[in-house]
Length: 379
Image (cartoon, rainbow, N blue to C red; front, side, top):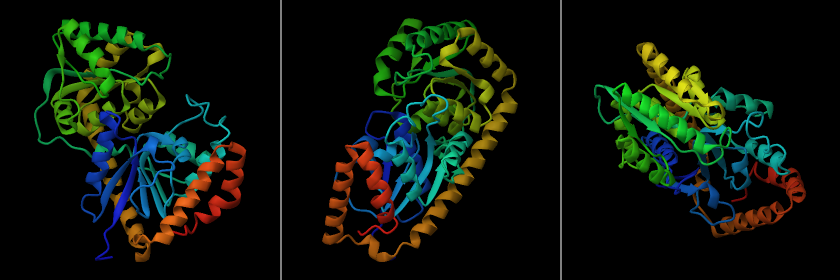
């Protein structure tokens, strides 16, 4: 393959001022850093029907985008999923399988050569659809603190802020109860630092920090700085699923404020399912109870966390190496883009986009034409 530049297209939710999704991209880039590939990131909500830099290989990164990301995903010659979560329709995403396009989404997962998922819940959902996958954990687990530092026993990091869709559909209740948690922990002489994970959480959290006289981490969008801060803290209380992932990467035990099923899956994957409380039954008392229980069992849970994270890091390294070996089997001619190939690809995806406007037509197109063509893409 020498002499032929190889570039992988990374498909993920980027460019949305979301620290967690940027951290996933950073983690996966690091995992593949020893391999001769260059990543080109693509925002997941802007891929369908657009001309992008050519590559015969695409990797879907983490986040919880399966199966509905398949609606706008452009298959290439070799496609892989690395640590993504699968929306479990039996829990929260009941609309998924009611969508008339759902059968196409699921069918298009079959074009992937290897699928690595976040946890057992995701693996089991895919198995129900007849799709094989491997549990490799959340990609953020492979991030590390920049240096080893003793934990400050009195420092607690707290992350708040859902995307507006949560168990109980009541962000105000969550904010109110966690405010009481902050006051309780202050009484116990803990040093509280609030960390936003999305740009639209800054105002509310900075105001909360000012009102309650606690710290606010304003360098939050620096991924390494955030990991280092969490690593130096005793414990994290987190709502965003990626705050839990970074806490695990930092080697810091956590209490999960489960606003959606992915929070429980990531907690379960690390053996922390007993330290999770859903937002529709959230109270200050429940969070404080979990907090004190975790402090009482701190050494045991810290050891379990670090052990689990190391296992997932090894799995991710092996899974990445497996992908690279598979990519190396891709004939060299596919790395060279021709005018005819580009034109064929353009018209093929334009036809797919047009047929997509009618779910019934899209299903027919997918069953009779798309799936067969994608076994041997003509570009």
